[in-house]
Amino acid sequence: MEFDYTEEQLALQETLQKFVARDYDFEKRRGFSHSEPGYSPGAWAQYAELGLLSLPFPEVQGGLGGNAVDVMVVMEEIGRGLLLEPYLSSVVTCGGLIRDSASEAQKDKLLPPIGAGKLQIALAAYEAGGRFNLAHVACKADKQGADWQLTGHKSVVLDGASAQYFLVAARNVGKVSDRDGISVFLVPRAAPGVTVRPYPTQSGGRAADLLLQNVVLQADALVGAAGHGLAIVERAVDQACAALCAEAVGIMTALNQATLEYLKTRKQFGVAIGTFQALKHKMADMLIAAEQSRSMAIIAAVNADSPDAASRRRAIAAAKAYIGQAGRLVGQQAVQMHGGMGVVDDLIVSHYFKRLTMIDLTFGDVDYQLAYFSDSLLPAA
Image (cartoon, rainbow, N blue to C red):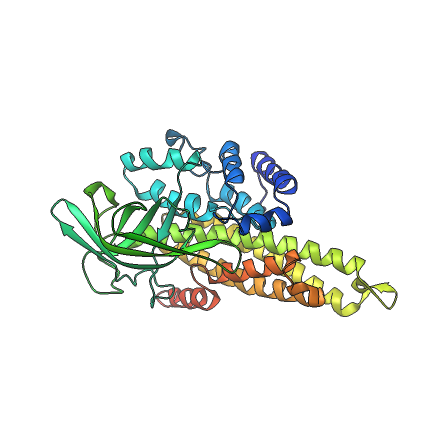
């Protein structure tokens, strides 16, 4: 099947490439990473002006009505530039969950300010001991008349350090790891009983642990139907995984370009090391891995908006598993061919490799995705 970006998508891609080259070079990125928010508020405002933050939202809520392939264009350039802003967490994951599952009143309240760059939301779905299992929810949601009371601990909330709201998965009935009985709540950061413990991640971003102690929420904080929240969280995470696949492709493309340039300029024995046969073979393997990863990322993006949970999850699991393996190959070979310089903080290659490693571990690593994919084939067999 032939796949090409539309003229609008190519124009968006070119705009982002120019922005990164002009306003987001490697040295500026390092400065943003060490700043208090961990990203550039100025860049976030520019994303809003360019329409990136409202791209996947319906036009009735001020969005552009884009789909997962449009998001793929953005995420690939985010990967190339190693951008730090919370686009994945706030726009793709939480924005997508609200778009697909919230009430119209909640959409009208939340999506326009997200698109304008004035509101950030983080997904608080994972807990200690659950690894990547979204059904492992011990956080409790007790009904208190018309209100809800939440108590629990959520771990590794991506970009939770800067979020004003959290989408929290909490259990109102059932046992830990039961698929039924999970609900999703919109929790303000400023609500009494909410404690946020932020920390930096290995790839330069920010995450946080979230402690909830008898947090009282009104009835309109519930997103979707009570007890049926797991499906809507899984759908949002699937869309986030598809976006991560695109980001990884952007990183692998940039790593290949940087490595090829190094092979052409670095000399040993009076000749460029790129003329050595062994390094040519390694470079060819890296290029093949990146191109195959692009094909898998396209499959993930095309399936990300599907309402068929089983086929969507299977396609995205396959893509993320393959891209996780390919990212390790490309990252390791790039570091090896750069020699000792490949792991120093002053060279962008090491930061690309760190981010590829973090992408693999986010929302399910290679082993987890392969296990899911193989198990999904059992009923058909």
